[in-house]
Length: 154
Image (cartoon, rainbow, N blue to C red; front, side):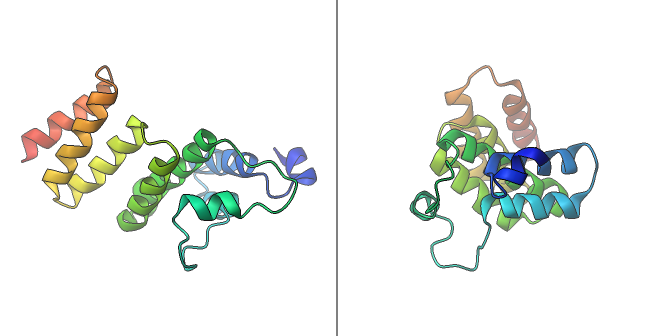
């Protein structure tokens, strides 16, 4: 990744993959957050930051943007980082919502959003997210497990 970044310092996927390594393997959360932020050009204070049109129109160089599914995956990982490590549930939900704009059928994203909603005691909304995820993938054992936990906790 470092060689790629020497040639393309803003390569979204290389930065995101390095962030994932820092987060998951090295437990270097500060570096992971910095890399995720660079990878997404993360500036939530800008108007309309959390929109697909902003991300689609921001590329003015010859650098190829990742596919919609790649970008959704980067957003999912950054949302999970905010959710699990930083415990910033509000920001995690915003990032997950943007990820769904890029990949509306991501059961992993729907599952994580439902988990956040359950923690926030928004049980009806969590239930709806889990239902949507299980309809998209009726064989997703993780989602079914989390859905059962929600049913028990209610």
